[in-house]
Amino acid sequence: MPINRLAMTIYKIKNLGDSMVKISPSVLTSDFLTLGDSIKKLEDAGVDMLHLDVMDGIFVPNISFGLPVIKSIKAHTKLPLDVHLMIDRPHRYIEEFAKYADLLGFHYEAGSDNEETLRKIRELGCKSCITIKPATAAEEIFPLLPLCDMVLVMSVEPGFGGQKFMPVALDKIKAIKVECERQGLSVDIEVDGGINAQTAPLAVAAGANVLVAGNYLFSADDMSARVKEIKNL
Ligand code: DX5
Ligand code: ZN
Image (tube, rainbow, N blue to C red; front, side):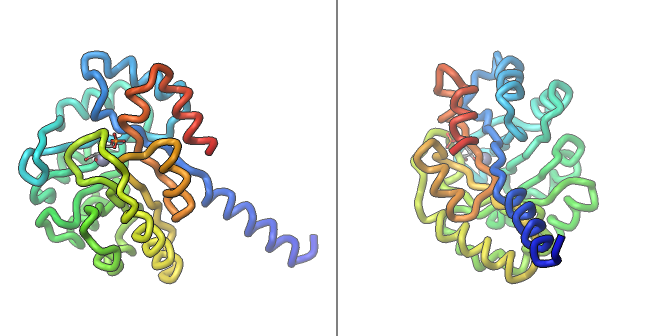
């Protein structure tokens, strides 16, 4: 094959890989009594991981679940666990959550030494993720990108499921994508909050490749049809 065509083929394959969108369902609005069944349905529907929202009632005005629940979920599924810590000074608990998380994310605004915490997450064998709230500028995390496997851009105020998507997230996703390319980094960009069939294509067009969806899936009669709908958009 001529070298130019070979280069073009490699380019296309690489971009095909890059453009694959992953779905990370948030179980926050599920019925916890039947969580095991819901996880089984999500596995069958072909989701890529599970998004687990940990809230402490301090960093966000809500309390969700913590280590014992995540430990049980880990024992129940082979899906990678994408843990989203919405807790104050998260460095205090990184070691504990790293026992069960595959991807461990925490908030830029939560009062930890962000660099050190990202390093520690990787040292503990997890993929690292920094998360920003809607009011935080994308540029603030640019120096941290080399330490991140993923960046999570919030498209709602963290704390509750079922809120409306905030379009301010789109420009931030674009800016982070451009900056990752400028720094020559391959970092996943996840978007969280208000994702549905209307907002998912906007987030993907902006550069997100991991979509969190909670209420849109768990409010549906046929959750698996909704997973496929978003995946095939
Ligand atoms: C909000 C959480 C989200 C939320 C997403 O603080 O981080 O993961 O559960 O749920 P929906 O898709 O309902 O906005
Ligand atoms: Zn979340």
